[in-house]
Image 1 (cartoon, rainbow over the protein chains, first blue to last red):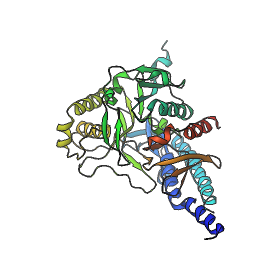
Image 2: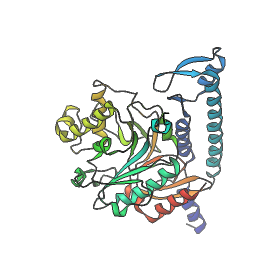
Image 3: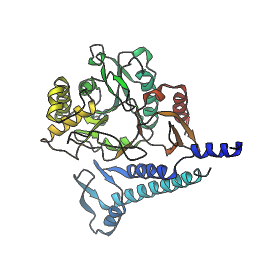
Image 4: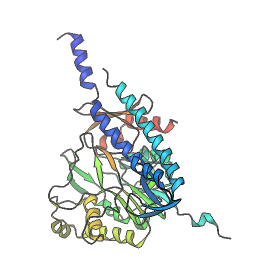
Length: 105
Length: 278
């Protein structure tokens, strides 16, 4: 085996697995999506944001991640949820792009 | 006039560190404490029998002389080798914690985010880690018992009657472990905090499982032998794992089963780099 091939083989051996890293990142993002509001814990999702956007009343009761009823101010929670969602999604994209870059040997 | 500060609940972290023949747990706790201060910014209480080795990151050090941890707990570890733990005092966390709200962590749980802070406002009695994942999404837990697995690695509790009962029950289970392990079909003969808390949590919920006490996310766990941690490319962590391709992850909490890497100089440097960053 030539030295060049050996070096290449060594590099392949040390290269990281993008699919594994991507999966771990997705799990991390799922954790990061949680946020606390009014003594409840919510997971930010498109469903939560859509529901809050379409509801008319100012105040309502929503179950949190623990199925506890939490009285919420719709606009306040919506603003918080949107901000949190945007922040986490941006960091997902940023970290995903960085993982994509380092998969090249 | 009511002093609002007096109404605020005190919050803090409790770590247990009792050295064994092979592993200096206080040395690991020193690194964990540094990361806790950086990411959670909470006061830390260390419970140990070797206070002289503790760093300045701890607000309180409780010298635990009458501790049960002097009695070694031996079992086959993640690496199939016989491993010793001095970990029989976890049930006493409720009594020794000086805080209204306490986060009890294993010293091998690396805190690299502020996610756990989100739980403090919503915890009623206690919350305990029930799910972990590794790079292959496979973490070997129990095979014989029908009980859901619990990780005593991370427990958050308020000083309420129910939490008190949980820790009292763990004490009772520990003292009568043979009886309880047979009752719940545990194959392993040696004591494990994970199992004791799983049994106690199960009993407290009328002999059924409860989602209410679970931390609602999964903790990234590295079960294999680790050669080194490296910080690179603006806050990405490269983990060199023995006989495996390296893993690259962004900053997140992680549970490290291989203690040997946590006492190395390279790990100390890795923690220092993170601590001094940002």
